[in-house]
Length: 311
Image (cartoon, rainbow, N blue to C red):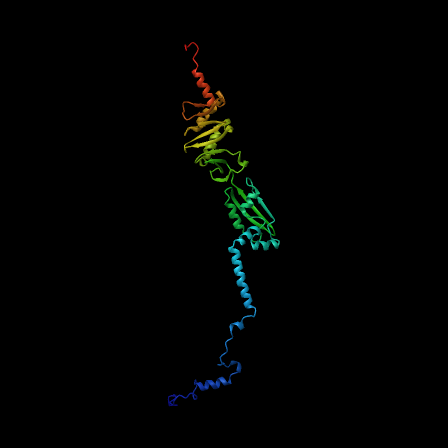
């Protein structure tokens, strides 16, 4: 070592700290479990690492996957679900959670079977896996239902509370009759006689003018009960069907025209005569159209010569 505290001799692989020889001597003094082994480990084949039955399990899983894929692709799975329900629902039913009772409140015009069909609930359903939000959305797609709520009562009951729209009239268009609400919205189709007592409007846009028609019925007084239907003509005016007689109203002043008809009926029983139409579109006169028989009799009477007239 020189005067500055530095080594001046050559570096020896065994003579100074940090050299390989010193590391080897220190390593030899370490406990055996801390010594690093430089002997390479022989690689274990993957076949020896897996359990003896892994191959059989893999092959079985592959065959099962192919079988399930074929079962689904062939349509047999869908047929199975249609007949028996989803596998999860089947398991839930076996565990005692099948839907055995459905309580429905708020039914007014609908039948219970219609509500269940709309909700998608039947004997294949289970309480556990029934999606109440989905059921509510299905019910809300029914035009007659204004609002609905669905909840579960374990183990096997579903409760449905619904509010139905109130039917206001029937609307006939292109030969088809629909049930409409007061605002003209179509809420159902005419399938049976449960709506037979509702007012009937006919023609394009007649549903949106329902308020006008009902006001005319009110203005008709005692004759209002005899009005069977109202036809909205050319998007401008109404013609009322009253005991087989067409009452043609003007585009404006329809209520005043009806008041004239009420007076004529009271004074002259005009609607009891052999007529098929009363035209009130002109404010200063009333035009009537006779039945074919009455018109023929009148024409024949006009052909006869008057008394005292030479033939």
